[in-house]
Length: 230
View 1 (cartoon, one colour):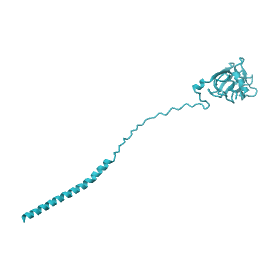
View 2: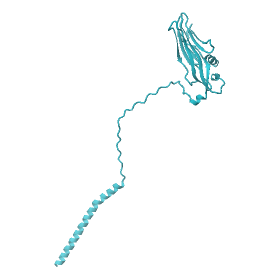
View 3: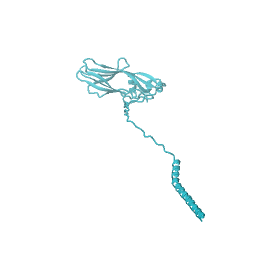
View 4: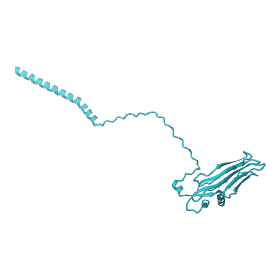
């Protein structure tokens, strides 16, 4: 009997010990499985790279320099190759004045008062265009001379430059003057001039002498006269 009792007790203890181990193993499996799942999930997700914040510094930026405004009437200068293909024509101003008049280019004194002596004359040298004002003993004079003011050059001709001088009576001093109001722009088809002159009595006189005008034109024309023809 004692052996049987001891065997039963031993078997009972063994069963209890085994069942205890099983229960503990099941509990450990439940607590470890979420951790494993979480770690595997976190391992499968790619890690995001952290961006470093940009550091900015206060910098004083100098304003851009203002561009120099260009005159509205100034034409765009031609390319060097285009200018090289043109021929330079140096024209006596009196001949150019006569040619312009024959094709309707107006040149005349403007704003002339009654009895005032303003005139466009040929210089004694036969080549210079003379714009002249002369005061009478009792009446002064002032006027504007407009040259080639209503039309433009034709057939590919453009203005290049000119040569002129001013003559003012020296006695008595301060009784006459000449001022240039408008001249053509280089490389422009406009050749309009505007000259203002005045003289006081009794001996005031002044003149503006336009000697030569230089044009640029196509090389296949025999003369500069085509610049005035339509």
